[in-house]
Image 1 (cartoon, rainbow, N blue to C red):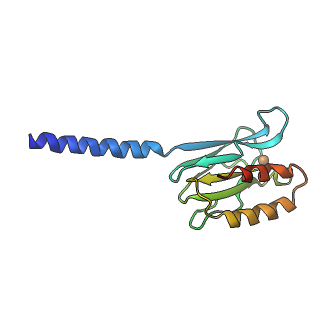
Image 2: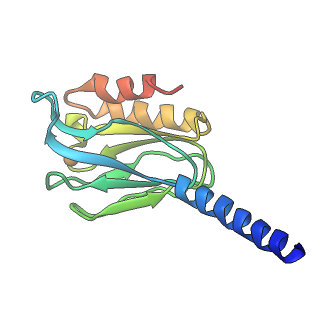
Image 3: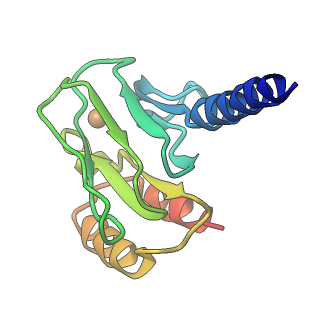
Length: 152
Ligand SMILES: [Cu+2]
């Protein structure tokens, strides 16, 4: 009987561990030349990305010539960035705000914001980075500000 309980406990522990591991998900962000609305050009979809700590954010090369790069991160969170068309996947290790841009289309307002764990950690740094980024914009000034406005 004791052995049965031990086995049951091990099984329950395994099930709990498995469900915790299954919760960490991959959140996909598409990089597109034309948005789903058929009108907007050079967009991240979604441009406001909600994730949990432990999730992986994957930038999907839906169209070519994009180059995602973080503008700021909460303390302790590694930023991301690479070459044009380099596949970017990064793990969210800290809750908070990560604004990002496409290096290639920065001036066109191709940008977005990640909010991890429903936290506002790093918001001040994010607002400063977004302000600086916005000064160089030639168009679509409202995009990244619209994404920032979705922070909860
Ligand atoms: Cu781009």
